[in-house]
Image 1 (cartoon, rainbow, N blue to C red):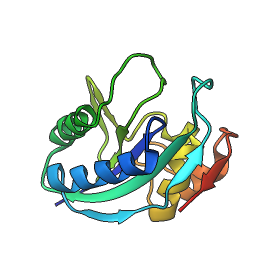
Image 2: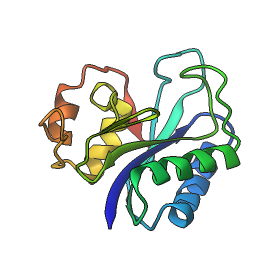
Image 3: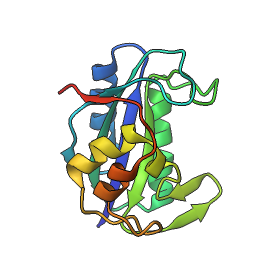
Length: 160
């Protein structure tokens, strides 16, 4: 069994509903969701002139390999109306693979651990809720250590 951590997020439409629908779809297409962080709200990162995002981290058990998880989450995004029109632009849902076991994967279209994780407070705050002691296999720091050292100063607010 593989353990995968996914970040779900979006800033268009009914944000809580999209997160809930993504969580349900992940449980069907990827595997059972064993834990879910609270939902966090943060201002848009990268392209700031857009609505704030809701984000949630899921810990999922799966029999799928990493590339199959990627294909599954991309299909979920598409089924929930995700359109890739502008980098860092608004979206109904985004699902990123943060960790896949303790594997280091560097393939075209799939880099795990997520290469920008250490620089994004909106990723680290909900991830820290579920796995503060999980070591980053490349940076050799725990999630809690990465959060404490995160250079991103955007406020992240727990909303539920």
